[in-house]
Image (cartoon, rainbow, N blue to C red; front, side, top):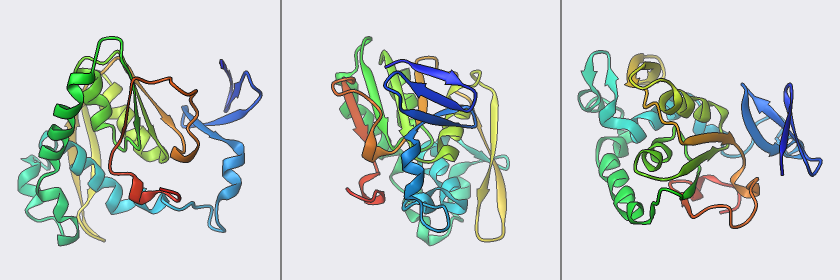
Length: 214
């Protein structure tokens, strides 16, 4: 159904209302807001704060990031042990996924990337020949990061802070991709705001262990 833009709200033709978060469509119905606990935080939110959020950029964009003038591989040698997964295999994991998906990409393919995080896989699908790709994540911060990296003018430097530990931060830089054939929404994987049979391919990577009802 068509969405009508009314300032901070989006109104669907069916009558359901959605709010916007920093001008990004938040396709979680307003009823979803009532499920927060007393701190206003829902299960899974802890994955998108502080150290973990910045590490998502490392895990997804690793070799493409520069940290204070050096390649990220040099920086990762000093990353705390709890993030050891970042140091080994993350890039080869993404290449494995892309090799598996690419034979199914066509110029008219419409793809959904559920739990897209900072958007690496969403952007790769868009760059490698898909017709249109939608990246969906519960975290507005993740979606805003994906929008900056993928949708801003190609080559533009995007800077963000990496939380090295509880005290120290380092400035990291990645170049914008300038992708044209993708979009991002804030939404809940439990209540996807799409009609059935809307997509030719659906990706749901590194997500199931983070949701309330896998």
